[in-house]
Length: 292
Length: 292
Figure 1 (cartoon, rainbow over the protein chains, first blue to last red):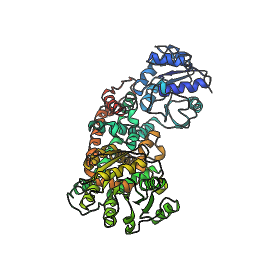
Figure 2: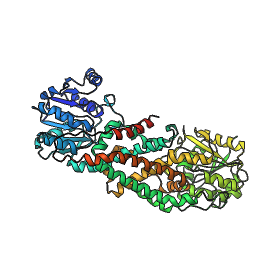
Figure 3: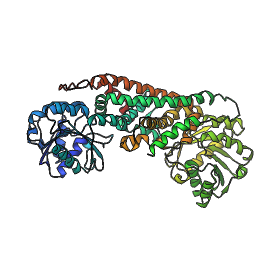
Figure 4: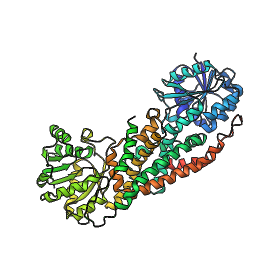
């Protein structure tokens, strides 16, 4: 199984990188992007061979149809393309949430030919300018089939991602969204929380050290992409953020004793050493977690 | 101004790296570490020329005396060394908190010769094995004078840190601890919170992606070092964690609407697009912060 022609809607970091991989494998890539400047640039760069058209009419010519727009726009694209997808043997997307798009594909009678994809790769950078071949090399790609997904569709999706040197893992959409809320969305939103806390406290970014910078890197990501992901996985993400609140509350509770005592010294020359044991126990648990 | 002999207590990442820098500059370094194995290794490595002794008796021979133990032990070391510091023209420490040690030095009548140091560098790695020359190159080092600090003491401290290619900044201890609670301690503890949340939710570390790993890196740091810092700066850190709770609450509140609506579709084929505007506004603010 392989495609001769692929259509990609959305030429950002993920869609653009996919376009480069497919083009490199000799597949004719037709593209669309809401930003016509990007579309022109992708064509000029020799990656996009033609345009799908504003109504996605030329989706009729493609063997593989790939939706690579933010998740709040993916279903609209699916609806717009559906009437044209006569020839496609694989319809997929690359969004970070999977329940809503898989459900929408099933409802559109595309269930046999649709399988959701989520390449667990990326960057805090975004846009066509950041796209590159190799982005997916060694990355895990979650594949979420519809209830009616054909075996051949799974094979086509595996072929697509093997071209990108990625490893695929099949998982149902609900489990995917639940798992990713913790392993991806929570860290992302926590980085934003740190940025908001520092901003609201009036702490200049220039004052932050190397550790803080590493914790703020994700917050620089595209806000639209991530607000759409957060909205589409709000129930699971909320549960994860709540667990984080609990962890903060535990740390604050372990700190509470010291806050009263550590500054009580005044001119006192007695060293009165702290007992950091309860705090150390919490930090030790966290440290052990990261060693797998 | 320069020293011929320096004494360093604590040969971990910071103390060990300092020892290497001073040795490289031809200064005779006497050392002490609670772990005699480390002391032997540092001597075998040719960095430590001799031992300060269990009672720090040979502190009497040093021009510069540097305390590089976790902050909950620094004041004890200062007390133990004080009777021997006849010759020292500079007494300093390298802890991440500065109020308590600066206060203790003043109370010990070491005020004229003491200035607290905090090299704003480091790593999630720790111990002699991780120590190296170059660790402080280009790093900022905060210098916190006592009320009675002599000008010559400031000069000596600047000489010390210039040897390490670091940039010094003078700041009073209270301002230092307040600022660092946000720019360093908060990100550190937030990383631990994320680790605890994932651990308590039963999420295997192996399932986490590259973004999560970057958010978990700091949590791998030495729990004793950081619990001592947290305890000694508990009042400021608690305020910072509280601000973070506020940011999480804001995000959860922005998510709340979606959590109810986004899964209401069932078999509904209507795409009912989300309005991620309120969430996007929060993430945008966070994103703009990181672009400084």
